[in-house]
Image (cartoon, rainbow, N blue to C red; front, side):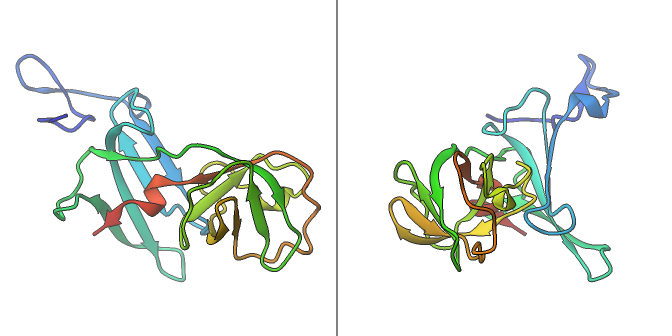
Length: 181
């Protein structure tokens, strides 16, 4: 899809821009496991997270919490990806068990397709709620693949509450598949 204007510009038939309100834009933010908002994304109205319609930036903060750098997702040719990136096209991978171990090991109901170094988010686990994220990147784990249905999350879960049921793991697109420059 080719765009001649950014989605936040609403051109009239005469070529001037109409004023738009923030409520008309799609916006997502993620802490990506940090204390501050690490990723910010904007898209045209009614864009789904899996649509190639997002402009995504990655923020870097100093030790005082001040924003010191903002990088934007770039295309494979190194150009700023102006409203043509996918924010997140991940599918839920059902969890069947999480061990109380160092490091904690997650077992999935089917093959997970993850590789070493993938960044994942876990949500909706019953029992071992300490691993649950907020769905917005509040808690992120680094995968070490054990086999097709098991991986470790790099965290000592031995002191966590015992896993009882449920939960899903998501391999977030904006964390794993984009380059920022």
